[in-house]
Image (cartoon, rainbow, N blue to C red; front, side):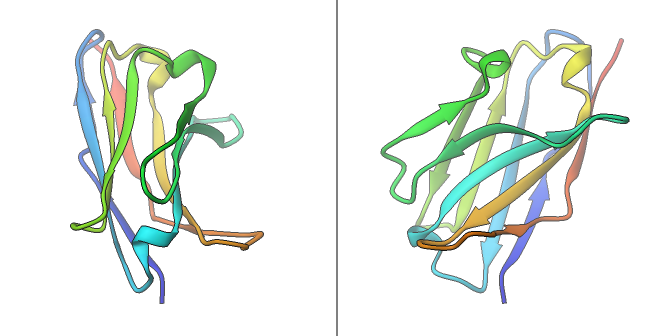
Length: 118
């Protein structure tokens, strides 16, 4: 059974940084593409970043390029999202998402709240 547990969210001032973690279990983590999504109040869930199974390739939403970095440690079954230069508009619930090889639909974590405010 796929389980994804996010952590690292919280309240941070504009311009600050946070690192989110997503601990995975119940599946072969090193075979899965991992993604981070976010959903702000009243808005649709949007893709933040993605990383391939071995971490060779990453991609980002345009508004996050240069500020956010996705990475993974397959030995620890964990994917990370380093967020720098945070803005109030980055305030959202951030979700971890796991997509297996050949899968059409993946699995979600429960989310972690990030609030950027002075």
